[in-house]
Length: 233
Image 1 (cartoon, rainbow, N blue to C red):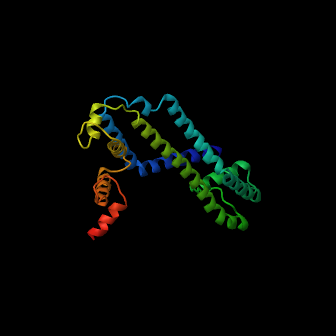
Image 2 (cartoon, helix red, strand yellow):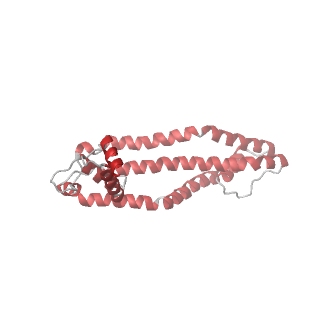
Image 3 (cartoon, rainbow, N blue to C red):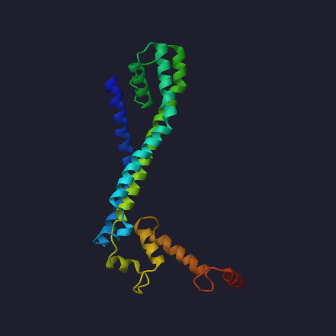
């Protein structure tokens, strides 16, 4: 039973990892493709001030452990209720502490071997409410840990992208109007599109919308533009 307690806990984490891995596989594959494309377009690391230092990488690693611990601490009251319920069932049924924890583990992970079950009608009635609660708490814990890890992977991947140095090829790609220089708008477009924050098509649509609203063609939106459009109508 002691072995099964640890086996189930490890097993459910592994299965949850596989399930979420399948769920986010396409997302991370797409993000990885963006990173690889960025690497192909730049031969060396990004400008040093934009890149993370080793200390920032260490901070990311530390933040992962910190956030996971914080999430676990936040669910401690719920875990305490689970143990209280399990030991209450065990006390009424005359189970040992190990048997009670074994029942809790098997139940909360939704494995349900059925080899240890309450016999009294009172505890069976109690389990009608206890079992869904236990499964829900376990799912919540796993989802919180997975959410923290997904955010960690995204942040690490983004920092990895930002560690690329600016090259002449990058400037050529950023220079949309081919005037030989890159302004802040061109830089923002390149970075947002390459990092997958926005698609190039959406950016072009927004630019077209701005130009349509800029009736005076002065490069800005003002009350004068509203007057021009009103007169046109």
